[in-house]
Length: 588
Image (cartoon, rainbow, N blue to C red; front, side, top):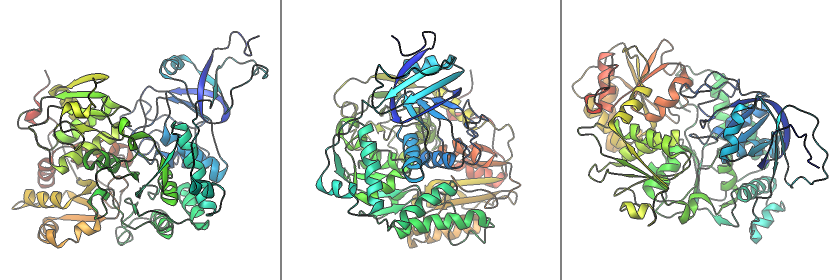
């Protein structure tokens, strides 16, 4: 006999986190970055580029393909769970480590949880028509003798964890699991093994360095997590750097940042420092002297840093969610999976392009943004840029925008990135699963998506997302030389403190300060709010594809996007054209 009422639609799924829930469905076919896309205080979608913008996730069965963009989505999920504003369940098209990890941390450390399941692409699409769902997610397959659910008009998803792998553990791993090295190491290893099993890994590998992204203050839950670990005497086992935090540690009081943000943001950073994390405070750890080498096995969070490390340096890291980053740093171990393994680094999507003549530096973030949208979870190779000779800063701008719209941990550019000396090498000698071509019209449409604001006035220029390099500061100084900033426009550059203090760029920094540029360190534009910039500002100009995407939702302001030269022009004139540059052509 069927265990379900014959008229109750039922689907089989995979369990990622166990539990039961039922409720009304909120469905979307677009991946969502929870950080920068969902307000952790309210559960409302704030990503103005997303079809769910303005909707509330709380108390809904959230059905979506998965997350994208920021690694800090796990921290937002933790805030939602501990604040009572989370969805009742997550139903995904496939496995999503960022969202799963946020729920696992809430469960393991705070005793809060929701079921997380996946149902595959075809079943996911079918759920669009369902107003409500019941989710029953266990670890073992449900036996035929199990009692039927109560009569319901909901569709029912029955999920189990029979797909989880068995992970072979070494003696050191077992000691940590047994608690011999303390509670923090035990909890960390439990979650590492759980994530490894979910990923289908059969063993763990040694990690040589880490980078922590969970130091960004998203709310009280993230601080409670870090303090809990510190109270367990947690200490990192490997050299570990820290991402940009939510305030400039030396200047936030002078900048007028309220203590309600400044004090807990400092406390969060201090908790990680107490665990042995170096207070580097940068979202560009590849600029540090400790930057990894080609082939080095690392565990980095921060989406732009992950993509740069894999793609431009050739180091090996998964796109680690916040909190899994510190767990790996505490143990020095990670799943042998994802882009740690050679077979998972091969491109499966080929993107062809003929770069427009006379393009400026805004070409790179526009291209990265589009490639990220098309790639989704697939590793792409971009073909056709062999004569373009992108600089490291151009690759970084491409990668930061790519990481905003993609879930993939890396990209290749044929002829330019280290694992893609040519197209065939990037594809591993195989044919791509699919091929796409980007046209000038596609780039122009992306420019228009970034420049939806109808007003041409600009009151602030935001540069340094990710942190400006010494070369970018020098280029900015050259652009500003001999010009006068408008009194109605502010301009702020975020960068790493060591870069700003470097004697090599002392002249450009002094010249920029005379021009009217303010520099902010330790934090970046992803978390800067008024009053660091004037609360009266209505429109912010940027050259960052990442900030052009997240900015409108984060600061509730109009955001305009253009080249570095465009940003300087806007700083001097207070205006920016609402029409795309000539190299992008005109709408036909």
